[in-house]
Image 1 (tube, helix red, strand yellow):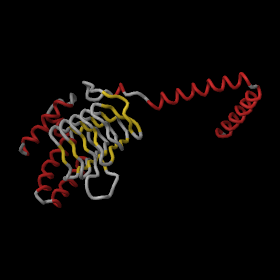
Image 2 (tube, rainbow, N blue to C red; image 1 turned 90 degrees about the horizontal axis):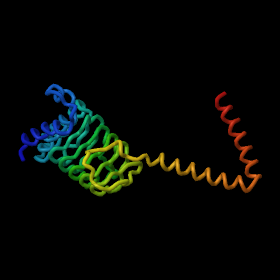
Image 3 (cartoon, helix red, strand yellow; image 1 turned 120 degrees about the vertical axis):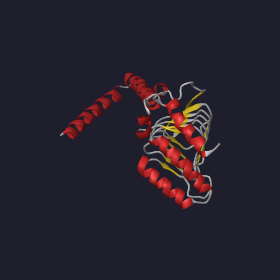
Image 4 (cartoon, helix red, strand yellow; image 1 turned 135 degrees about the vertical axis):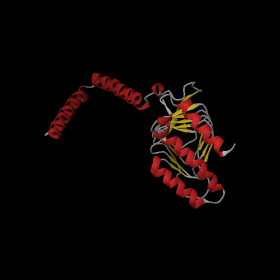
Length: 233
């Protein structure tokens, strides 16, 4: 596929992935992610032809204009959409296949200084949520989803959802929605609720059987209350 055909497809892709677009004026001023991809497509071809310094300069200027840092050596497929885009970083050996959506603040980075493949591979149709960090030579499977602000350091299987720090898979199966943020469970909240209920059950059992423990607990409560008062003063 030719360069201009790819760029035309990138422009058309905006209308398919963002219902907020109202006019060509919006497109011109409010889609830095698209313009970053366009500059990348040109710079990438120059890079492959040996004009590495020129391509790096082009992407440096692009970074100043869009606040999106894409290394020209990265491999980005067709219809990749960077939504909003501010703060996105795509490293040198990153491979992004087709129909991928990347939200603002995403880093596709490396964890090694060794020469060779050290950045992620993002398969077809994957969605990377805002602020997510995908680090190292790992693979995000086709149609997988990475939750916002997650830190991914291991492979994510296809058609699955990964969240957390470090990220872990919480759900498998392809969802027809691109990214159902409202369906992501709050794992930390559920864990804390379990721990609180578990501790309450154990306390109740101990206090019922041992009056000395109950007296000691009351003393600790007084000490804690005194500490809180001292902190407020």
